[in-house]
Length: 218
Image (cartoon, rainbow, N blue to C red; front, top):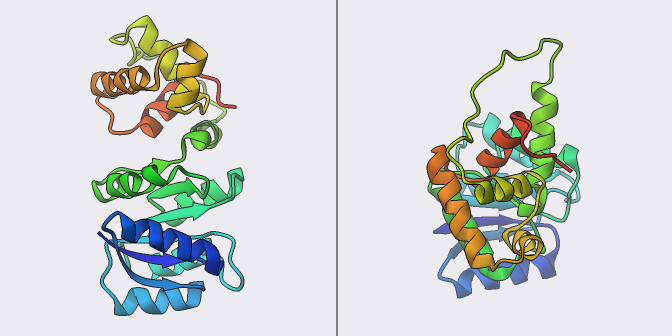
């Protein structure tokens, strides 16, 4: 995996770079501004762009917009401290394939990037509820939807309970604590939920759950 890293904080950037390198990821360039990131993206071959949002000068969102406007379709994952609804919505609208928080567990970063390279989107567990709320707001309209069969009839009561927690933005660890089961057990249930629903990610499942009124986005 070849990564272009764009972040204006030198200490943070160095830490991320060392983390990636320690896990066999090649950092083709590590730059401190959106302007430099755009230049490097044109000159270098990379598999994924890891991009901060709140940067001096050109913001991460604007950097992403200019990448896409120039025809660059390299997957982009935002790595940020921002939990703001507006930043998440803007990043996804601009074409980001992922939105992760900088307090992510170190061992979770590379698997998340691999998920994106596999063709799926990733959003920090803590923000799944936010994403569902954004989608719910975007789909709201004056007309009431016609009654439809629920896609969740194949799920067990426990799986429905876990899906509700996912839609509320809880991580696997938090769900395990709430239901008094291990995190590994929750992971097995999540895999079963995705398989039964024919979905690729917990984000997709959470959005579907909120859309059908199963969970309450917080």
